[in-house]
Length: 75
Image (cartoon, rainbow, N blue to C red; front, side):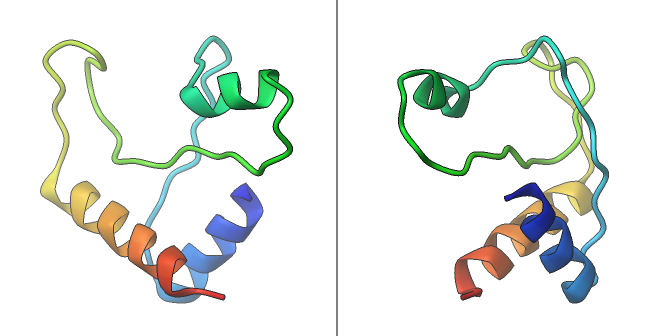
């Protein structure tokens, strides 16, 4: 799923940055632990001070929106 999203961003000219949080969990991770066979990945704008007073750039919000739309409209 991650490779597909990166390829889609590259083909669409959407800027992105890969980041890995080794101690992070998500609803998707819980879904996988429950035994559901589904592709899961997380995307979103980069933020500073996550889960507190979060700050980001409007460009990051726009790129994330473009990325979600490109995925939704892809085959």
